[in-house]
Amino acid sequence: MARVVVVGSINMDMVVVTDTFPRLGETRFGKGFSTSPGGKGANQAVAAARLGAQVTMVGRVGADAFGEAMKATLAREGVDVQHVTTGREATGIAAITLTGGDNAIVVVPGANYELSPEDIDRAADAFEQADVVLAQLEVPYATVLHAARRARALNKPFFLNPAPAVALTQELLDLVTLLTPNQHELATALQTREEDWADELQKRPGQIAMTRGEEGVSYADANGQLVHKPGFSVDAVDTTGAGDTFNGALAAFWSLGIDTAVRRANAAAALSVTRAGAQGGMPTLAELDQFLDAQS
Ligand code: RIB
Image 1 (cartoon, helix red, strand yellow):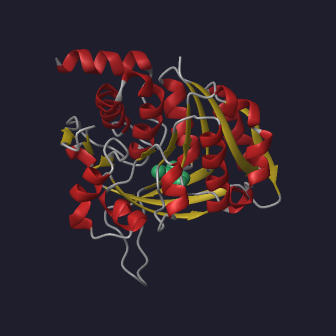
Image 2 (cartoon, rainbow, N blue to C red):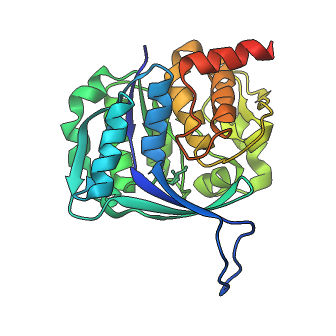
């Protein structure tokens, strides 16, 4: 069983379903509204836990009902929440507009932005026991950098899902074992042109797994040859959290090698979009195995 530490955000997702995205200045009627657990960090933690990993979450919520609910959800999923602390700000929220399976998201980070390097230091034991440390960019950059330094000092693989994307400093890049951007995030993170993605992957063999939605995932092997792992075709209900499922699964399966881990993570991400909510469709290990057996 892989031991995964997730350093990241915890949000309550507030989801509005519409037929079409509203234009600027327009008021439209929606078809439905729901709240559901989210946040890239929490989503990745739940994805890994459902697939059998032993997961510790390092994050912050507010002293409010959303914070209580989010912590309880994580605990119910088997995620260790002893390093989920309570901040002064409100629990983070994400306003999600969902239209025909596609989404547009505005995140208000709240307490997530109080997660500090000291919180990372307090989770020292979990870092020492980890097989993989996984982070995203919905918490302060300085905290992510601190987590990356600690992972390196302990010789632990550090995965960074650079979302929402910012230009990454060379120091952080040098500490990342595996970067998992989509094509746009790759260009922003590395400050390159989107069309140069293949060169960037080949310059960093095995260090970038670039997600391409339904098309799958690309990376360069140890010889610098591009490898493409196709995605799985499913009927999408809600794509929110598909990337998070991929990341959580990749961390959970990392010991199997990049080839197998990416294939299994692709399958987990495909299954995740077949149900509503960022975490709603994330598969268990048994569901994933059943799905993959049915493919062969
Ligand atoms: O990646 C999806 C997540 O992004 C949502 O759950 C939302 O909370 C935002 O963080």
